[in-house]
Image 1 (tube, rainbow, N blue to C red):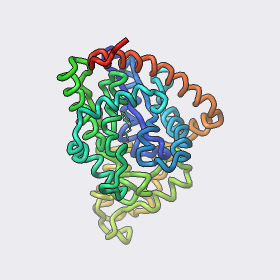
Image 2 (image 1 turned 60 degrees about the vertical axis):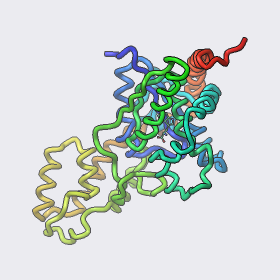
Image 3 (image 1 turned 30 degrees about the vertical axis):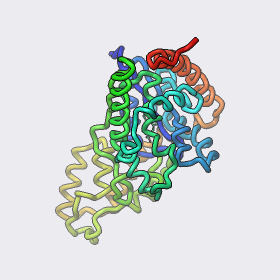
Length: 335
Ligand code: TRP
């Protein structure tokens, strides 16, 4: 069943390999939406990645291939989804310039996602202007394609909200041009890091990657935060806030067994070692097909670059059409 009028668009910043948090928060929804909708776009947001990596062009460049590999290995299918690179669509930059007139500096500084990231990165007033404005360019990322269904992690909701303010203002001033944008957030809450931190993130060093080997998974699960008061096997343990149980609840296909394990753990008599062994197996079963496909695909990087080039050409055709309409509506179409 393909919904005709929904246009799906999503993307990643190429700043590192993707991890389980990305899968739970967004990739899972991408895969589902790809099957339900006719028009799907996947963008590698290299321009956005450069907003806080201007001095690390090599890092951004090398991760373009990595995030493409991660997504294709997970099942995002270039035959169903148009893959493209943000920097190669100049219309996105043009649209960003027009949208910047519809947004105040005060509003940009209030965006909770940006505020949070600024704090994390230690920016204050010395934030790169491009970084502060990335929600505006993200609105352009979405609207050049007239996309309205956006699978994102829940941290991105304020960015989509700001994009919708731009849609409203643009339509009010220049006439009906864009549709309201609907974010699609996964029903399960965000995935905690292996250290119990609220968010799994590369910069916090608490992530399990979609390309991790069994040995890496094993080591990370061994380091996972459990119940610090659960010292001997016989001791009663706490399930809430216990990262191993959080992960089993999300990834273990045998949820009735997980329920039993929770009861046993609470009562005492179930050791962390046994539990971690089970989680290692569960995660390895989940990751190994992705890892293997990834390794296979990585042998032919030219083929991946060809997918990106073909998709970028398709996206540019759509972008040119949208920009013609936008300029006509803005009365800056002259010749
Ligand atoms: N900001 C998004 C993230 O960090 C990535 C992104 C850039 C994006 N442009 C987008 C996501 C457009 C959805 C739609 O995850």
